[in-house]
Structures are given as structure tokens and as C-alpha cells.
Length: 497
Length: 78
Image (cartoon, each protein chain N blue to C red):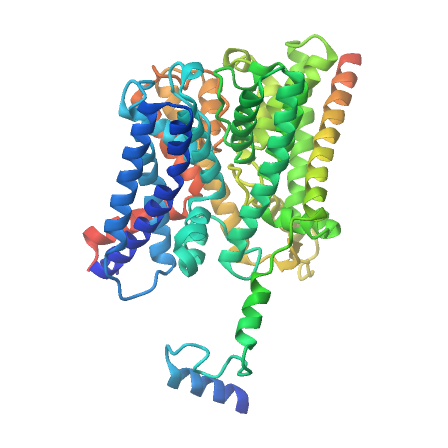
């Protein structure tokens, strides 16, 4: 029997959603200061309006009286609502910019930013105001770290564990969620210092940009690369720079973003053996090397790139962008649409599998791929070996762990849900007359929060398809649990007793 | 019957939702709780460990670049 949520439950959900709003009100100060600093008064006014809406909603909701602490049931609903409502308010400055034709387009861009996807329907990106570009990239950075990490850092405190689990981050790296949150921030800030310095140096020395322009581009590329988001300041993405050195620097940051924070912790503590033994590391390296070879061989058979260096450079960068779920590209979408056969298979599989769990990346995640492979291997052994044989059913992931039935079921169930999600988006794309190959590529790109496009995503795309892609991005980022909890809460509110 | 287990159950049942400190589960020496909390808060400092992580990442990029180049060379030969 379903239990109808009490008014106290609703107040708890409202209160913590309000805290997330307050956290974002605090973050909104950054683009506002940037707009005032560079004299962009119209965007500055829209940032002030957004800050006000975040602050008023946050203040009103946090005043709701509650008598119980937040638990995991409330947490999942708060996270689901947060990822739906924050983009709606965060879209205000974009809506007032005049670069979008309607609010669906604006909301699409904000959802794509916050879920670190990178698909965009923005018109005339090359002439977007600096502060608005900063806000789009900042949204990706904050979305990559997780709304909850932002909220824990700013206000939520002890209830963060329930929220963090709801967001698909299962493991704490350190004993408490606040120390884990601080560690994630520390890793991000260290990478920001190194990454921005390297990108600034490349832009200033090799590309001949002025110091101010170099700093702005370095910061934007870092935000989009580390969050595996893929937004860009230019409509031609990283292809604008024509620089293999910049692509290598961005590649390093993309790889850092797709690595789990547990792996960062192990490397930070110089536990190299543990880092290499982890099932997730092995699984990621295996799929990366295998699919890279498949993509490169596929590209060679197509003969798209004639020189060896051009073939290696374009193939590797697009592939790295796909497997890390970043979405940067150095070739136009029309050229990417020409990657058929094995190259297409390698790219789509890489996008679907994605990066590591507890990272900023999307997709099925390497840990689930590894666990699924382990289950299949164990089952094969069980069939092949004599009845009654004892088969070891453990795996190594930050220590020896038992492969319980629950773990195996959860990994395979979520993997199947991702496959279903990709197929639904593909079906809708085909229904609108796109080819199977294009529809599959774009759907996997949206569901895996990648952001590479073969040209379907543009301002003239059908609204229904746009909504389907938004749902894919949202579900792909939250890994389904929060969605089921939200649906369950709504259903029990209607049918419960 | 295990005495300790029985006592624990009894304490849990009687204490109900009381904080652990009031149930006597935490060390009672003055300052111990604060000391433990300080231990939990300790994070690895961004010293040479952070540089190791960055070096590993760029080494990986270099390694995959070499791999991509090798595949491109092999494929072009055949």
C-alpha cells in the first residue's frame, strides 16, 4: 500500500530545495560581478533579476517549519526537483539575451549546461556577451561537481549524505560527506590552477591572443573540459583554435574530469597499485583502447583524412571527447555525420559507455561495465565447470568487495535502463524522419551527456524531440533513481492513503 | 547468552533515539570527540600528490596519442 506523503514530508522537500536555491543565489554573484566589471549592463541587470528570484524562492522555502531530519526518500525528490527547477531560474539571463527564439530553447540550453551535456540551440554564439558565456560555462562546472556538492559546500551540512546518494554518488571518499565535498572542491581547484595556467600559456604564446582574451578562453575551456561539459565560446568548438597543443592540454583536463574522485584520491595518496587494480580503472582502459583502435581503423577505411598525422589527431580528439563524454569537437557536425561504419560504431559505443562513476562524466559508467562483464564471466564459468564447483565472486574496487546478487542486479539493471533510454530517443528521432545512424548518434549523445552532434540539434529541431533530449540529459545525469522517486512521490500523493 | 550483546540490545531499546554520546557509546575523556572530529576532517594537502595526478593525466594523454599514431601508421601501411 502506498503512503501519501504528509505535509511534513512536503515541507522537508521544500526546505532543502530552498537551500539549493540559496546556494545558487550565492553563485549568481560571480557572473553579476563579471558583467559589471566589463560594463555589460543589460546582462548585468538580468543576472540581478536571476539572483533575486533564486534568493526570494530560497528564503521563502527555507522558512518552512519541519520537525524531522531529511532522509534518503526526501533526498531523491529534492535532487530530482533541484535538477528541474534550477535550470528554469538559471535560464533567465539567457532568455533575456535575445539569442533564443523561445523559452524551450533557453531551458534546453540551461539543462544541457547543468547536466554537462553541451548540446546547444543558441543562435549566433560567436557574439554572445562575455558574462553570459561565463554563466553558461559556470553552470557546466557546477553541474559537473554536482548540485549537491555545491549545496553541501555552502549550506546543506549533515543532510548532504542523503542528497549525495540521490545524485548517483554512492561512495564517500572520506568518512563524512562534508569532507568528501571539500576534497572534490580541492581537486577541482588544483586542476583549475594548473589547467588555466597551461591553457593561458598556450593561448598567449602559440595563438597570439592578448592576456585578457587568453585568460577568458583558458577559464572557459577549463570549465567545459573538467566538467566534461563541452560548451564552447566559439560556434566551431575547439576547431576554432587550430592548435594541436591546445587540444592536448584540453585532452588532459577532459581525462581528469572523467576520472572518478576515488581514483584522484588514490593517486593523490600515491596508492598506484590500488589505482591500477581497481575494476573501474581496468574496465575504462580496456574499453578506451579497444574502441579507439576500432574508431581509427574505421576512419582509415573511410579515407576521410589522408595524412597519418591528420588521421591520428582528428580521430583521437573526437574519440577522447566521446569516451570522456565532454563533447568538444574539432570537426564540423556535417563531417562527423560522415563517420560511418566502424568509426560510427566505435564513437557511439564510447559515448554510450562514458566515463567513471563518481566523476563529472556521464554514460553507463566504467564500473557498471566492469561489473556486468564480471557477472557474465562468472555465469560462463558456472556453466562450463562441473556442478558444485566453487567460483570466486569478488572484485577489487578500493579494496576487496563481494559480488553480491544486489550489486550485480543494480549494475545490470541501470545498464539496461541506459540502453532503453538511448533507444527511446533514437525511436523518436527516426519518427521525425532522421536516419537511424543520425538518430542513434544524437540520442546516445544526449543520454550519455556527451554533446557531440551530427546536426540534428539546432534551433529548428522539432519541439517534441527537444523535450525528449532534455529528458534524456536529465535521466542520464541523475542515473534514474531520482526520477523513479519523483514519480513514486507524485503517484503516492494522488493514489496513496 | 552473550552478556555484551544482551546489554547492547537493552541499551538500544531503552535509549531509543537519544544521541550516541548520551548512550555512553563515545569516549568520555574530555576533548576526545573534538580530536576524533579533527581526524575526520583531515584532507590530503595539495602538495606533490596533486602534481603526481596531473603528471599521470598528461602521461595518459601522451600514451593514447602515441597509440592513435601507431594505429594510424599500421592502418596506412596495410
